Image 1 (spheres, rainbow, N blue to C red):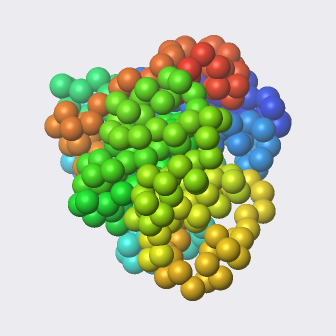
Image 2: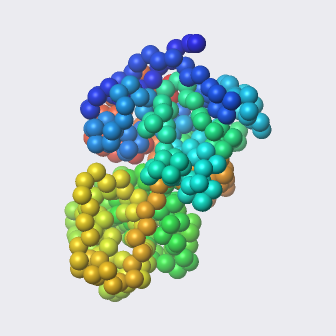
Length: 351
């Protein structure tokens, strides 16, 4: 067994590069040589100790790589193919998967999220992909790693915010926060048929990117109250769908306040504290509101569809990659991403 470099969780506020054995694989697994990966906001929660993982675990859940070994039960793939696997790796056989909730694989909340959570993840030179036939998706030669780098997580999550919100043609949609997931939600809302997209952001680079992704109006929350402005823009009616893409009480509550009676709040944020429903914002439970949460959909068919969207040219997420680091320098990448300096959106990490 050879050795590899991997970014491991050591303790809160400490992730560092270490030598680890290249993973062994079982009959239903695949081994990838990682060519590109990235850092997610969830990884920052892990770094800060806000989301608990085992010490020594390899972090990361957004892989692009080359198949170097296949388990004996795997058919339909061959070594040397370039593939992605979703951040969520459902087994495809359990009750949750067969019931249409594959992100909750195994019957536990977030059970389908294994990379960098319950098993070693993608910020390494090699990655073991479990249930490979249910999770690997080929990348066409016409697409670069960076073009599909968003597919495993933020594109799938952001688009799912629009899908779970059941956006219809002609809808007005508000999206709070234009980080990577919020930007993908904006792109997903446009593709879903929303004809008026209002986003909330203050970072100039993100405001510009929001417009590029399809926002019609961007509200700078430091310059004006976004709830008041959205209600003014909708003549007091409110929006059909409000998407929360940050994970704070303030933005969640704002979504409730701007959703029209009978409207939907689609929540994508990862919350790390107590979340409350103010009586007035919730219309005392009488507003026919729908609140829906979504965990990044995974699996090979989901990845195939997202790759098709990228390949069609209908959305270009490559500009979201604003910085590039080698795996050896991932500590500096974490520092930059955690501090949100220099207009950072996503960082391409290459072993």
